[in-house]
Image (cartoon, rainbow, N blue to C red; front, side, top):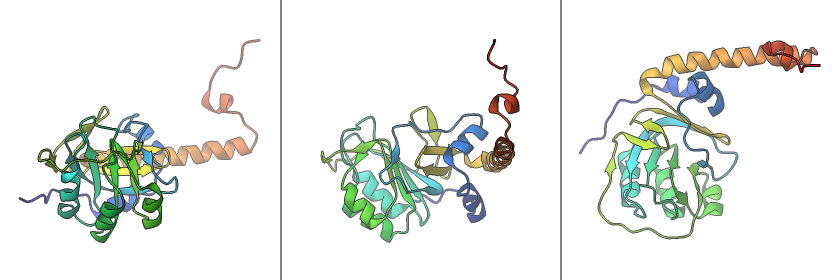
Length: 213
């Protein structure tokens, strides 16, 4: 079975990596943000790359193991666990395996474990939290299919951008427009900050009504 879907080019990924997740989310019209509970296990971790989507049955991680060996270097595994949040689907062994395969990270709508070891290994993991409960290896689930996490659809090849604030999904077909808008937003914010340093107020700069007297 082939999972050779279209991925963004390296230049697009590199450009997307220059923007914070919140900037992209706002620039896309406040779209694309995954649930706020999904955060990096280590606050310093950042990720940016194409999504390799995974559907795992609740409390079952066999498809994550399989995805590690089907994804390409630079891919980010994005995993829907069917609402079974309270288990550690990914830990030390899988992090070593994913790192050896050259993957760029994991985003999982559930928990992981071995937090200290994940930090030591340095493989970026974004999850809902930490849980020690184990998982089974039953059959079920799918790879490289459209999934939905929170209220966001994630397709194989969509761009995943994650940092300490959270994770945003950029639809592959809208990448150029999203990144152009992100640059415009960053430029505008730089001008605003310059004006603030000159003594202007946010009330004045944004044209809001002052506090009534």
